[in-house]
Image (tube, rainbow, N blue to C red; front, side, top):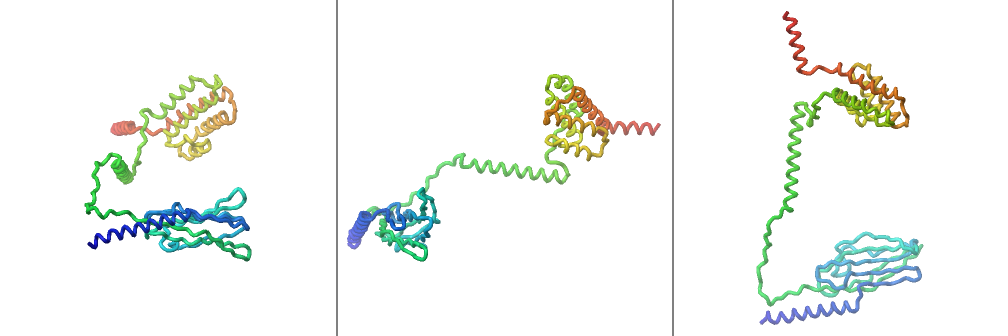
Length: 343
């Protein structure tokens, strides 16, 4: 009997709250606008809506248009606006310049309420500081209606529905698979690096050409000699091919890195080597003449072009003599010397 009497009472309470919310929404606007004509000030307070479900979050925007010369102080709130309306987050003031020379200052509050009914928000006060005077302007009173969820008490209780088990898609596990492969590859590289470092070996060994460097370089010089590009007006191409061949040979023969080096850098690196320097002057002559032809619009004479090619052959032939014998040649020389000593 008591339970049956409680149901009409609850319905009556909900009906009264709903009526109050509708009544407040009817006579209250979402926004409050006003104007201070004497000082050219427009100010407002706006809500996204004035009726929410308990716990919903909406925005309260306070705005004021003012001359730049005025200092206007916005209302200050801590964690609530009046009774029953809580502030979740408030943003800093945002100033926007207007075309008429004034500025517009906005400040946003994210608010909510956990108490049903109609909540009254008192007028918001803006303090205007003008020289030695302070004036206060106020918005209109605003109402916020908060309604609760409708619960059907006539139905029996029921169990909570458990989550649906769906098969795992490849897209869900792909990042883990690829991430694991990358980690495994990094671990392998680290192990190889530590082993090579312990043996004082480089991690990545540069593949040696099948042919000796001087054979490849001489073959390229023979091709350049047959083309005779300087006779067809392709002087820059000739000197570019020639210096590329010399650079390749120096890199392979003396383990230099000349592909991106300037002429001065190449000459400095060559002069620092402890080798016979008879061919250093020839190298300088080749590189400097090539720079003039490629970058200074200088056209060498035919004899000068042929001289650069001749010097290139001479550099390679000179350094071939200085190359250390191969391991097999060393062993054969040692065997021959031993036989001579025995005789």
